[in-house]
Image (tube, rainbow, N blue to C red; front, side, top):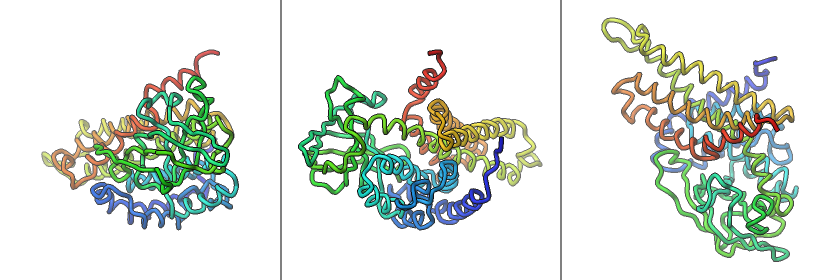
Amino acid sequence: MNFAFNEQQNAIRESVARFSAEVLAPGYRKRDQAGVIGREVIQQMGDMGLLGGELPEQYGGSGLDCVTAGIIVEEVSRGDFNVGYIPLLASLNGQIISQHASPELAGEWLTEITAGRRIVCIALTEPSGGSDAASLRMKAENRGDTYILNGEKTSISMADQADVAVVFARTGSQESRANGISAFLVPMNLPGVSTTRFEDAGQRAIGRGSIFFDNVEVPAGHRLGDEGKGFKQVMQGFDYSRALIGLQCLAVAQQSLDETWQWLTERQAFGQQLGAFQGLTHPLAEYQTYVQAARLQCFYALWLKDSGQRHNAEAAMNKWWAPKLAFDVVKQCMLAHGHTGWGEDLPFAQRMRDVLGLQIGDGTAQIMKNIIAREYLPR
């Protein structure tokens, strides 16, 4: 067993860490207030090869492994949790597109996405069903050379910032559930596509909203994979993104811990450093242990993916544990700072708001535990 990163991975980590600290962290609060992730930041990440690096080179990737993709998401998220969602989306959607789109369509869009010139989102959830994703009702009517899309997708991250969306719609009967769902790559500037934006407590720079499709004509060549197979495609992709989400959340937790450990050496009370009080250090020591264990679990899931092994249960473990743990860690770090930590001039309140949303999005803890139980129950 080897828990060390290789020389290339360490070099990438150092480069991304500098970018995160010098470029992203100073603008974390401003992007939250503006409610948008600036295109210049995304293009800078594209120039650095931080978007879809694990994709094939003909699509703008660098042929990196998934563990390295996790390193990138982790380090980007240390500086700005919300910006960390951009490489995650590029990886999740990039793998779906590269594996299931025609080479021409994949080349057209992925080279733009990996360069940071275009943003991609994923549109699965509908108003009538969140956790029961296979119950979706949005229609895609096959008319030979085109499909006509009608319906609504809701709770879609980056809905009003994306240039293209991986959209899931029903091409079969409602009774066929997962077997009747197809995936499409839909440019957001097509006639009949419109969006709204929600007012959320956190993740404001990412944004969340609805996408409406009103008789949207999508070329048949934009279908991803075989008709009726879209649901299986997205479920496989989520196993990957759940490990990345875990690292995105844990990066915020570790950054908060690093800042708080330092704070305890700088602040004094009753004639000694705060670090001398076990009431402050013991909770942090416990959380440091949990964060390190959860982080290893995330990288283990990515290693399993790189090795071509099943990682359904491991991915689900990442998804339910890391967001909850990150919220609890950031809260404890805020409390350790006392009244100073409660102010918006420090990032703890914003971090809590941001990580809390991922206890809901991309699969709730209850659904994740169902997946884990299904993997471990005797068959």
